Length: 206
Image (cartoon, rainbow, N blue to C red; front, side):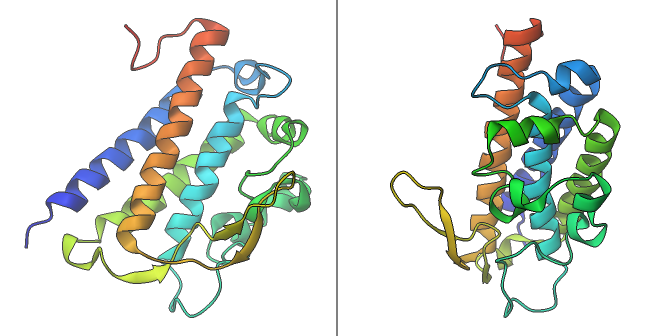
């Protein structure tokens, strides 16, 4: 069976994961946690945020049934299994939607960014690896398999934060496309910030 779609997706996802790690490895602790402006989170926050969604993706392949809810952090997430909120002395209520970052305040994003380079990189490497291994087992023939999405249904209320309203039915392919487009956006932010703050060229520099 042809696997041209998954081969392409897998390679692009792995490449983007690798680029995120490479940027973080090259920066100092201070550079990673430096806040670029009063309304902007540090580069390390983008690393953590991308990792959290990779964790949700890898965890979604470890549950026996899709009958349950994705409304709370999946018990198969490393984040949940290792109780990293407690380990890193964070307040889970300050971490935004599903403890993954959306709707966080900038002040709380800075706190996460100061967790430490080694801690953040270790988490990122493990969940990126887990997501890549799960994806490598998928072939083109099951991309239309129904599942609950790692991205839930949200209700947008004017002048308020988006609220979780339930699980969103989708397909494997949709979750893969969401992940690759999402981490691509944050890789771009990391490259832009390192260029703006530290005059370090990104992969798209000319």
